[in-house]
Length: 235
Image (cartoon, rainbow, N blue to C red; front, top):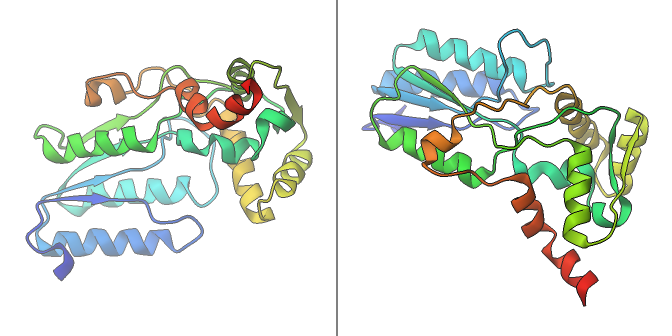
């Protein structure tokens, strides 16, 4: 509790998956309330009303925190986020320009958000008045599918980067061969299922409103991230 003394607004960052997230979040909320924190900002994953999709060790725990905040006493703001744009290489394997974009079968899209843009949006909420009891969704625009990612990488590299849709088993095997431990590959599979289901495909996000500018697009991120591969091809 002493760590929160004198703090009026608290940014509660989501705890790491596959830990006791409910206890960690509950302890932080209780300590903040006892210390007199007046406003808590939390960053759950986007879970649209009516959605039946559940991401293991993420969705249910985030919904738990939302309910605790609503019953805790201090004002709160929910700044919900889609998958981070920096996670695209994690989802598609390390060397996609060479091996192709491999993903489970599906055609859904995700409006990815960059970590920097998300952090800036959080800072706006923390530093301004008028965000009490509000919920924002930090969708990026445009939303892209795994097949779109392959096309973007083709445009960047100047040569075809195939999109290869396969079974869940093939997807996990590809990620393990790329160097991921199998539990991490299965975690990536959960995100890929959500993307293919269109869980984070919303087009009416609040990023631009909070930032006062367009957020980073998937094409901009991929162009910067795979610049070395592009340079190697050109030279």
